[in-house]
Image 1 (cartoon, rainbow, N blue to C red):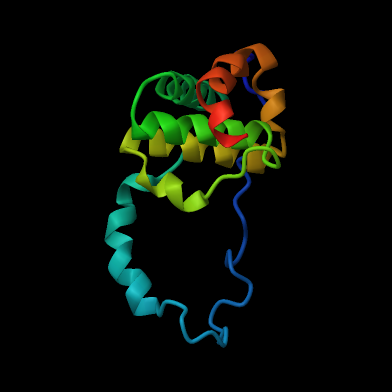
Image 2 (tube, rainbow, N blue to C red):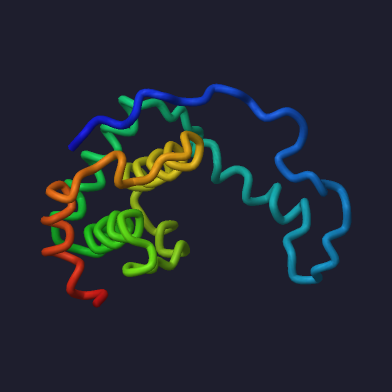
Length: 142
């Protein structure tokens, strides 16, 4: 695998991440602040410190997992395929919530890096890196 691009951002957003925070969204089915606070205890282990070496490690974890057997292998393979070609390999993002902790971190580090650095997954891996993933999981989705 080619190493991730060394550029990264350490800028912290100013203000709220949600511009309309505090304003009524008008959707009756949306969670209330107390419902979200009740779930907040689950989030302590989710802290991310995404940097290029961590992303390299995440790529190795995802590719290794995708070459195994089992449900997480399937999810990892489909995640990698979706990053490579989202139109050809659509992914239900809800499935990502079922990864074990290590794969959850890897998945989020990859997504965080791609979004924050505005890079394509194809800039991080090569076609030859993806060929075993296509062979293992690609046929299932065509």
